[in-house]
Image (cartoon, rainbow, N blue to C red; front, side, top):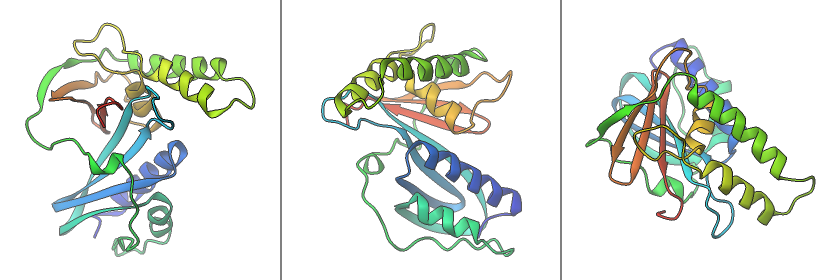
Length: 211
């Protein structure tokens, strides 16, 4: 049961933005009064591609405690949210799906703050990367050409940060609407994972080769 109409609207927006990137799956984890929703904004599409796996995480309040852990289709979640009633009861889809990224989620605890990102840097990097990928991929390009372009651009580390964060994190943050004007996103590390956090959500990056 979602906390209120604002949470329901936020859930719809998050799902719609995620589908625009990768109309695949969403992993839903509810523990107590909080629902965590994980989606994938970037991942390798071909064997050997260097595009990093970039996940988006949005947490939402529930009206009452719940216990859920399932990976389901984004389309089925969007359909249920579109028909959500005023009581805020979200019927979790019963048909599950299998996605490689959903099986290796980052830890919840043990994160160490590593610094912050200057406001505006991620938005600029994301827009530059989108233009660069478009310029590198000709019309009717095959999968190998697209994979090479994606890996070259989104796998490249952002400059001037205290940790080596792939440019794909900037794309994820922009596409999911996590960037806030004048807000400096915070950086955290935990083993091989890097987390980029703003007041709107979290971007989590782990190199594709590790997965």
